[in-house]
Length: 217
Image 1 (cartoon, rainbow, N blue to C red):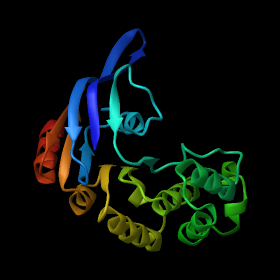
Image 2 (image 1 turned 135 degrees about the vertical axis):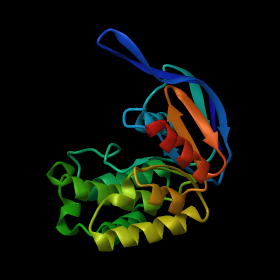
Image 3 (image 1 turned 30 degrees about the vertical axis):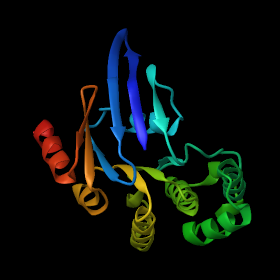
Image 4 (image 1 turned 120 degrees about the horizontal axis):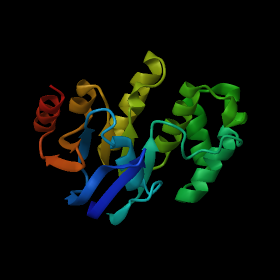
């Protein structure tokens, strides 16, 4: 369960305050997969970071029940000067899972070879994403925060990622950002539309997609 209590977030841009979220109060039911929609720049990634706790709101708070992932889809939770192995062991300790088991899983899943023992700063964007996704899939979360993550890698890795993520979703909830409506329909059952500081909830993902397309027209 994730609950927003009078949540607001904005930024000052060239002397003008731009609201991303305005006084949001809402409870998201547990165990559901939400597609988070909105035009470019609406603040979807910002909202994911606030839910994860990696960015602070301007006011209000987020109440989380259960284990919530970081925003999967990049390497923002990784230290660039540590190796993939060191980063994996660090996150295993943070989330209280078996370090050796997670290392073995990530090595096999991410399939980045000897780069796993090299500093993250030497990775390509694709390798960082594969590592981040592998670590996230190796840790059982109650809610996964996903930002375009199923789009990384070659066709074989995409198939593997989608199959494993779908299996994880059988017992977990998620909030997913994707520009592909086919991805939203495939993974999500409910929808959220972020528009001009307001977050709109839709019980059916098709209704959220329809609303999003109306706003984009």
